[in-house]
Image 1: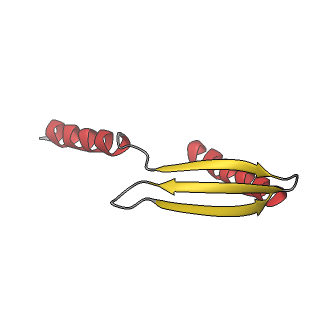
Image 2: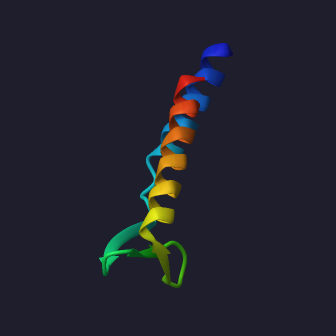
Length: 76
């Protein structure tokens, strides 16, 4: 019984991680101080495109915070 439960949990986790990524992110440099971020979500029936413009300094700070969060998550 334990083996059956373990197999079911393992197969469930593998199917979740095997899903295709629906969100793509493109980063373009606009001028010397700005960055344009285009997020394209193709999940579901409609395609959603979100365009944001950040200052380069702010975008670098967001990326640094994201990397630090990922490091903390991996170390736990």
